[in-house]
Image 1: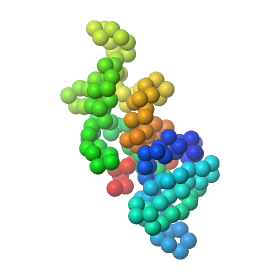
Image 2: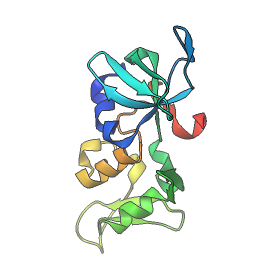
Image 3: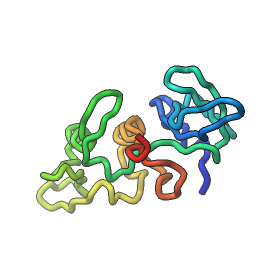
Image 4: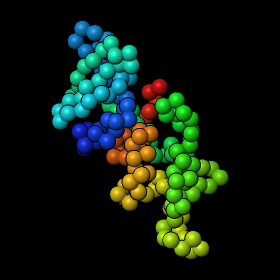
Length: 159
């Protein structure tokens, strides 16, 4: 698998950061930049202060994403700290958390006869409701297994 526009496009409205090469031509580029645009063969990046703008091909950068295992830990996103699985569980009766903030989903509608499925173990990403998928993308969670393929960098590891 290689990094492509289809992997990056969902994150574009949500200020995705990426790690870029340390040098481009004659100027320094910070290690972490903001992705400001994506095209079929390249992405546009900018620094936080907008002093540097550049373009990179897909094999020249890596997006910063969170692994799904971080759903049960406190994260910071846009200056707010929260535990994602608690937000998800509050938004839908089919989801609940345990004392360790692990997110589970009921597998059928009968609350007395159910099987608990840990959210991180849901193999079919298409089985996740759209509103949850939007939140996962907005919070920069890896929904395409890019971390496992070494096409992304874990967000906590770079900061």
